[in-house]
Length: 229
Image (cartoon, rainbow, N blue to C red):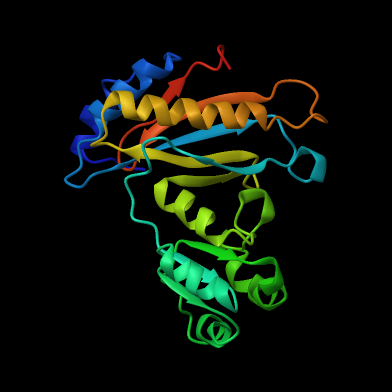
């Protein structure tokens, strides 16, 4: 893969053989984010889990203290007074059964997170084939299936992110933007890592965290020491 001049210059700042302390890694990732737009800073955590076994799955959510720097569009499936509660709490889209054909047939996906009240899951379930592969299916573990829609919306808007294993047992999550201060990124990173460490499956034998890499959208990966976790 051929990289551009900016990437090549940035990559020279990173020692591929070094495992950096988190604060040094964050400083380096900020330094190597040289794109013209505000790059997203992401963490990639390779685990020793085997996601094919239900008891080794990792899935949950954490509110990043300084948010993600991204405006999140929330769709809420509800009925009755929960509809007005969701609207009042700042949901971007609110509705029920009438939204199904719009998503299923018209391919409408102008939202980032879906919240549903438990009594709507029968309806939302029909969208499994559309929402599932995109990671948009509401889930009680992530706090997106709830009767307290106002709290769910407030948390999401404040910077709540979901984490889960992908097919290769890696967790990929954003922890902010390159424009954030090092302190803000450090606080977000620590909040995420606390949640991930607590989410260790009890059924797992052997090493839990295999590797941690920090990267910006267009920059090189920076390896983080897993020793302290």
